[in-house]
Image 1 (cartoon, rainbow, N blue to C red):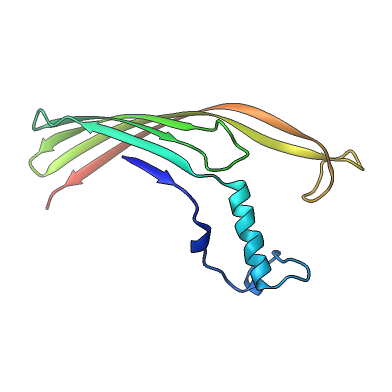
Image 2 (cartoon, one colour; image 1 turned 180 degrees about the vertical axis):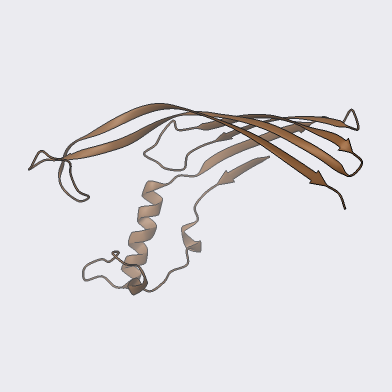
Length: 156
């Protein structure tokens, strides 16, 4: 399966400004608030292509091996090269005419950069949102995730 994710700004549902705690534009009206929100989304997110593919072999009636791969791009603009990849394998085993056991493994891997904290320019201490920033401390991570699943299917 191949899919493309994009953000269409014309399809956003808007609510009254009073329903959004902490979000307001001084002296602005509802239309200005909507324009501000749409510009924020356009500036922070980008369209991405995601790919998912899988293969199941139905050669034997009682055993069905499966393989899969997924590549998921990150839609956040400031997180370049944060492409998540997953490899999966599994098998379905027919235990009885009405009972099937499914086993699956999934391994995910990607690189990620996280902002740990920022330092206030004036006080030289860790900053609160909105304070001027002298520098930001980042951590680069190689993320590895492993998942195992077991399922049981019963036909009634």
